[in-house]
Length: 388
Image (cartoon, rainbow, N blue to C red; front, side, top):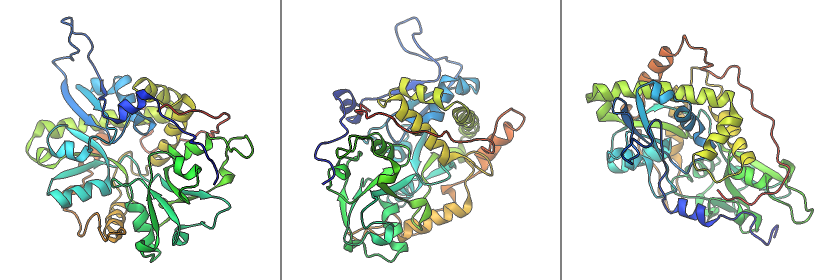
């Protein structure tokens, strides 16, 4: 057993967020003089549903609010958080919001199961950020070593890359002990699982900010074996911007707003790439409970998943889409369930709106492909108690 005490705790404040405390960050507004928090009547009201709590994963959207990019497009955007209590694609399909941020396989699963019609209009993340982390001195060096091991999984649609990767290695999922894992690294540090699911921009940083009780020093990358699903056949496209398919086809104003919304989002993420420290501060101000070093790590690692974007921010690579669909159709969990059993309709994605937004921004002084972006070289130098 590596660690007998939990290394990460959450405060009552954080527990309230996870239970569903709503965040609504507004691009324009404030007290309208009558005591009500209202916006400009001349601005189009837009609701954007996030997949999770405020954090660097969503820095570009918060930056677009704080920097006034949405307002300049004639939009007042309410950013709505979810602590697991709101499923973004369900909120969008139900007409509760105008756009949603969600992983591609999760939405495809919903589309097949419910018959809802949603369209991916911008693929924010070009690469998968999911990894499985084992101890460096363990017998786990890759997915092929999962058999007979205790493999952590969050579930809730986050598990399909694990099963797709095992299918790539012809591993029978019933021979792997899938352990339900909380959204932290406690079970791994306490020795209850052999390889933990993590995102490069969040849970992996938790490990690097934790103290090794045997040495009294922080853990380092040398202490771990990191299996990147991006390097396996299980990788799937993750954060994307989804719109209502029927509204895109029948509502001209909604279609025009989609292009305007995407122009502001592109500017927000380009700004976050150039100003990662400030972007980290913005997410903290928006309600994140992480400390600044953790948030900066998050923004930096999120930028790695976005940039470079060879064809421009958010453009959906058809080959990557097809690989995601293939992986999702191959993934079978220990109970025999699959996220999807057939290819989605062609309406599930389009580059029409993001390409128009990019074309509109060509004359601006923006790095639309991330060609000049360089990641920061970051490390941690002290143990923290997470309050996120």
